[in-house]
Length: 145
Image 1 (cartoon, helix red, strand yellow):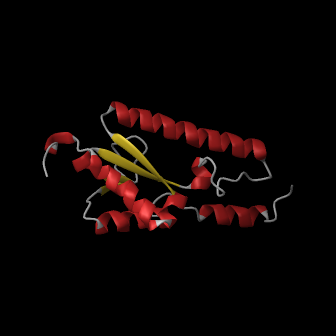
Image 2 (tube, rainbow, N blue to C red):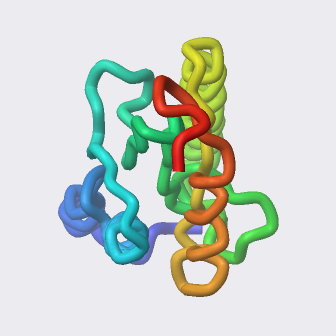
């Protein structure tokens, strides 16, 4: 199937895809902050530069787009009809990189949580996932509160 957009228009459209401060990420940040949770953003010294880092809970959180990170069973995880080999390799690379980063973070003693783009639409589900960050304390303050 042929792309409905010209190569120039497709290039322009793809250049607008952001890696930081996306709408789903901002929804998670607003909710976490409203819940009194404090975090750091995109720490460069951690594998994968997690979207939110909760040092107090020794937990990192990734907010993944369903399309780019292949959320299993999600309607947003569709595959383009053109250049299928390119896209398949791209998606496989994204998933493999996510797995490598998660493994490294766990070896470093971090808990890793993922919130999917579609999860951010349900505020109750999002609140539950953020509450799970608080469920296990890590680091030097373990046992406090």
